[in-house]
Length: 303
Image (cartoon, rainbow, N blue to C red; front, side):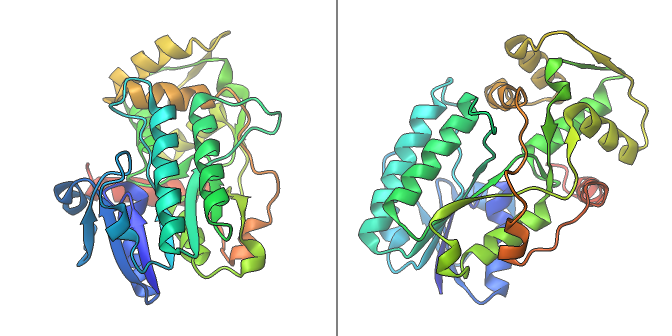
């Protein structure tokens, strides 16, 4: 099966390539920079350079492709205009995929709050999802919250905060719940998505690990695995714009990435149901096991 993986310079895309090759796929990559792909460790004989925003390279990248993985996110370096950028990228890719006769697009996005409230970050993910599902009807959208992995930017951000802050000052969003998922399990869902029966396609699937927890409990449990004591102080308000700048500086991250992510913490982000694991045939790892594995990998993957 001819498969295209976009975003191969990113954490998920780079890890997905060898998984698909092991399954017997002919894998082509699509990215803006060959140097960044090599730095991410993605080994590809077939790499098309282009830009989803302008559409450059898309026709060549999608030629003869059966299944395309859409793993493009653009929250950094666009001065807060990522919602418009991501929408235009998705629409250009969706149109090119439909024109090329792609059978299925598999997309990894974000969980959506149950009550209809939604942050800019999650609204953008939802708009991308809809554009792809509308263009190629047998597509699949996977929705996840925190992905626990050594190269997951969100997870590394939390680890750096726990490492560098002697006391954790947690805003009001600390009481909201999340359901983190092991990065290894996300890869299994993505790989299974290429071959999933058509009766399970044409829709979004919510993903989550087996453990539900508040964000405060999430931080405590990561600290416990790291074997460090980090007292927490609860704040009455969220202060997201200010808190995101401070937290990004402490963790050495880009505030343009952190602020939209922290806006999403102001909601419960848990799956609507737990049917995805059975439908995709994925056995889920427990949270502590996922954190232990990610921390071990971080020791040998410093970037």
